[in-house]
Image (tube, rainbow, N blue to C red; front, top):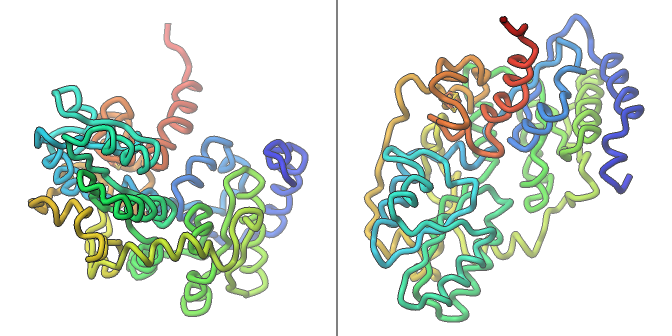
Length: 374
Ligand code: SF4
């Protein structure tokens, strides 16, 4: 199977769905967590939930890096952007994420120099083009995007480019999964493992989940058949009483990960002792900070950062949704005060946010099926 169409073949999907129904024990309720926000979007975009038996419940995990970022970090970055010499750069995904006093896009509308970049090297190019300004890159993401930040910092150091810095908000996936498993209100049977992160870290770091926690995990791709096949693999493990790490996404994910990317991460970053996650609180060794050797390009050292802490609006239940305790529609603000047009939480605007997935696919589908009143 090489081409996208083959991963969306209706006949094969029908056969795989039948296999899922055959494997799912009707006397059992299965709670499977898809860790990655990209999986959540694929599940709703392709309507996969509708072809699963009702006793298979998909729980959305914390694998959306924009969503887990606490509001205070956004405010810290924007505070820095207020300096007249600074150009604030970030991925487009960040632009509508609300801080306590507005999103980066709203700050841009108010006159701040905010620019969307498609990679950290675009930010580096801006720094070369504007030697009289300071270009700050608001870095965000799991191990998937952190290597490109690392390589950019290595390039900046090699060139001696001093008007460039990174505000590092990179987080790591394994401690988040551990926090989910330690959460007393979370009962899960198995995990659909994140595909993107695993292209870098490989499958080995998940082995403790199977060995110590007794939970099967299958690293999955993002096409409909990838996800359905991963569910088949999980149900087989559960039926046979096995708990192993399996790799469904072998066409992309090497078991040992990407050695070059891991080497770049080790060169530039070290683990922070702790980091605050929205919804999960402080988690030890769960985020990356820039090593001393690259301190001259670390925005947190170059500038005096306030280290703002902001609590989410009281009625917002982003934390519970991020932990998988509540479904997005169960948040009191969903579809009312909080919509993609007027988001209260990042989960409603990020391309990997579960509230955005529900709103764009489920909520609109339900609204479209309502009878028209005349
Ligand atoms: S609906 Fe809005 S406030 Fe509620 S959990 Fe989702 S993003 Fe947060």
